[in-house]
Image (cartoon, rainbow, N blue to C red; front, side, top):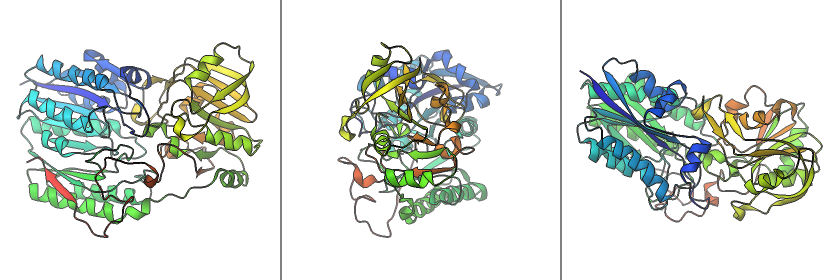
Length: 505
């Protein structure tokens, strides 16, 4: 017998505190947009789609039905037009392939749309109506996904990443595909249990490596998977906390083979541990001058200054320039690398030759609520079309674009100015422009976690610096309007709560 298995992806993390909406172009530049058979080009990538295909293409009884693969960097919510196009591509292709035996879809979990707060739940429900009640539906999610009841009710499997920094997208895809095929063949009957918490936490101390609170939680989930015979998967989600929607919070998902009681018991245990460790996620933040002083006391470099409030991987515009301003005011002499997104400045620089000295205003052109542009003189050092190839992480093996980009020299600072914000895994952006991080004393990084892997072999130290922006490590600083209250850490909460548990059966 031949099993026809559909594959699809719509993946982008949203940030409601960045103005505007993302269009289709954002996928094709900062990620990829592949329709129909073009999706198969991801078979050699480290993405979830690559993981799906590594399992399905080896199965002689499977015929792969490629639908669409769309992945973009984190950003503001999608426009209604963008989401409608992507959704309809999946639904229309499914309607033209009526005999689908199962479907794998890769989502982020914290994506929002101009007029929808839970598009991934809406998408899952819409897919279910097309494929019918019998065909299994498996969803993969980033571990910063906001898992909702609509997702659970429409699906048979929900599998989250296990690692942060994210380096297991491929393995997550493989796991989902293997479980899906067991469900398709009738070898398992998955029961999905979701436990939701009124909990919004920063991701900075949520590494799955070491002995931090989230690492301990992930180890407990691993223990449940390994020791409970009926448990097929246990996922824990430290929600991407920059969306402002009613049904939002950290959660856990446990899937068993036809054991609803065990699924509810195990998922409640994980959620309770997450809640009990909530105070361990607080972050120590330094003023810029203190970080510089401490960095100068350390021999060699690079020393990383973490601008976590302008994290492009969390949906920030990447146009923050306050850190560079402060470093220039402190008159640092050491070579320092920094980045900013500013298409206007890039366009201006294209009118001048390399080596030209120009007067510029740079930064805070996209999201001006967080600061004012830097007015200064700069020398144009380099320019490119902005193409980069990722060496690891969720985009590993794929090529994306920063858009036309330039490098400016401002005293001791080399500033990479790009047209688009891109996901920061390691230092691919700097490398592509001939900016060598090993030679710098200070490197400014707009990232909350991936630096731990991307710079692991070269950084001498890192400091989180106090700066304005839409991705702060303190959730109390954001103007939430839609989330259900009370919620930790914004409100006073009891020490003991009962997680809200729901299942797909």
